[in-house]
Amino acid sequence: MTALAPRTQPKRTLAFLAYLLSIPGWLYVLRFRREDEFATYHARQSLGLTVVAIGAPAVWAIVGWVISWVPLVGPVVAAAAFALVVLTYIALFAAWIVGMVQAFRGRAKPVPVFGGWAERLPLG
Image 1 (cartoon, rainbow, N blue to C red):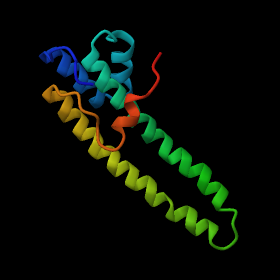
Image 2 (tube, helix red, strand yellow; image 1 turned 45 degrees about the vertical axis):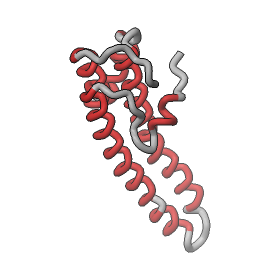
Image 3 (cartoon, rainbow, N blue to C red; image 1 turned 180 degrees about the horizontal axis):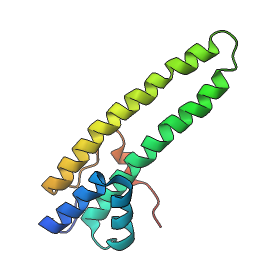
């Protein structure tokens, strides 16, 4: 997104709060401040980070449970795969910080790794 409205201090604050307050932040922006394109952009980014934060351990639990049924090595591989969840959370934390900084500075840039995907989220 390049052609967003001018970023005034209230718009930047609202976009920043979409990250800082996570679920309540992006819910508020997407429900009550939808006309603010800048805040909505950052709320989508925050929503994307939240979806990944919830989805990563859920996917690991399902895949790990299936893999753990493989005799001998299954449980070890499933436990070792948890390292991917940890790496995902490290990347999420970095993206969250970058998103807050970009929102505070008034820039509409996607967060690293997850931002491109978050821009395509269908939100009615």
